[in-house]
Length: 211
Image (cartoon, rainbow, N blue to C red; front, top):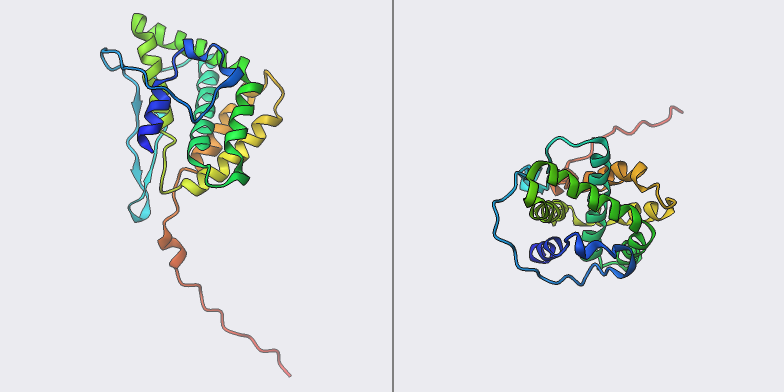
């Protein structure tokens, strides 16, 4: 699954996203050769072990952003989460993650395009001519930050819910809610150890009514 996610991430350049709202398919991603360049300073905090040895993927850490860049980052991260859900959650047609994602692209395509331009400007400010490579690396890392096995069912359910909420938002208003939608999906990435389900229930003494 990690390989598929990597291919999706690296295949998303600015040029490819010019028509993002039209006919993007989450399960069709062509591999593009990686350009040789110095790796930009985009970091993903290492996954932290939850109880029982399970791992929680961490969000991408960026350099200081302007308010508009922070909104663009939230929009792009929300898109990545919904795209990963479309890839990973097809085990249940009732979640409708593929349909949600494709409808999301159509409904909010204009804001997604603006987010691409804004984040490209962010990397241009820091990295100059390496901005495109930085954006590609950032997109790949953002996709990978939603990859989970230990919390897949919880993530899929939450991503389905987030996708439905996003489709209720009028055009041009996604940015107002993108931060909270992203945070909802990320919260679902925290796995619950099966050990917590094995804790003994407290014994409550039976109280008989007095006759």
